[in-house]
Amino acid sequence: GSSRVGGGGVGLSTGQRFPRMKRLHGGCRKHLHGRSFTARSSEQTEMSDLTAEERDTAMKIQALIQNAIAIGAPKFNEGDIAGCVEVYGETCQRIQGMAKGLRFFSVLYQIDKLVMAIKRESPGSDLSQRAWGMRRTLDNVYNSLEKMKSPSLKIGPEGIVTLFNFKTEAGSLPWYPLNDVVMGGASSGALEFDEEKGRTVFEGSLSSAGNGGFASVRSGTIKSDLSSFSGVEVEGSGDGRTYKICVIGPARQMGIVYQADFTLPVDSSTAKIRIPFSSFNPTSFGRLVPEMPKLTAGSISQFGLMISKLTDRGDTNPNFKFGNFRLELERLNLYV
Image (cartoon, rainbow, N blue to C red):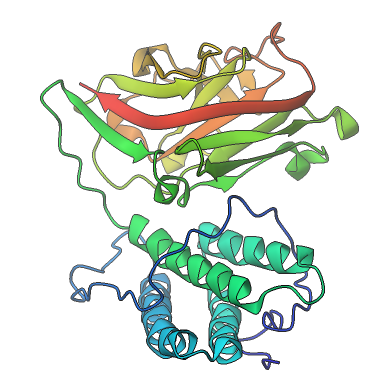
């Protein structure tokens, strides 16, 4: 088994428990174990909006992953599956210890999902599948850190830019759950990649326990200036329910979330709906705050998706019901 490394965590190769668990989405997508990442200069990997400690830690985690794959992949390809699992497991433990206390929500989320998968394994399960699961997690953590860098927003010929491409698993990685459990509720919700459909799904279950009634996910920080855009376009299909696009503005407006309701048709095909930024309403804990200024695109720092018993104006949502929900997404675009 592996030893404890990096301040806390668990022996991933032995399947011992973490103190925190979350649901695993999708299955292991097979790929060449010997794949390497493209080296980048320190200038390219600089994450200017993070603290110096966070930038340094992010670069160290990426280097750690590269090193683990350089060691673990040959072991796997030469038949030493247990040795590969040990290398990957110890690396995941070290990443967990390094990421704790920093704003690496999606990194810790990926590690937690891996542990949940290991917990669900039956005795005598295929060790090679565990190796693939660990490799997939390391890939996702690496790409998660890449997504924290400033995106390049190139406006297409139709005046549209894709901010999040949900047709690939990487599109969901910068997002993390924020459900009513933070206020004593018991609802659940997360972004899950559906490999069969090639879409990312916002799904979960809404519970009335603890006076709950919402589930949501938040994106990573948006670093680009969005002032040239007029609104957001959602591509996907719905389940008949009303959802919200949420936008977080300047830090000085702490607690204020701008929201706009939308409903996608119940259909297997892709529908598009446009929501101008001028129609977003300022809210605090779901209630309208009319004295706040209108949303300006240049102030946007974060996006979110939500399903709630309240509308974007704080009224009772007539289309709300408790139970399972499912919103299939292909892209989140911006338009000029």
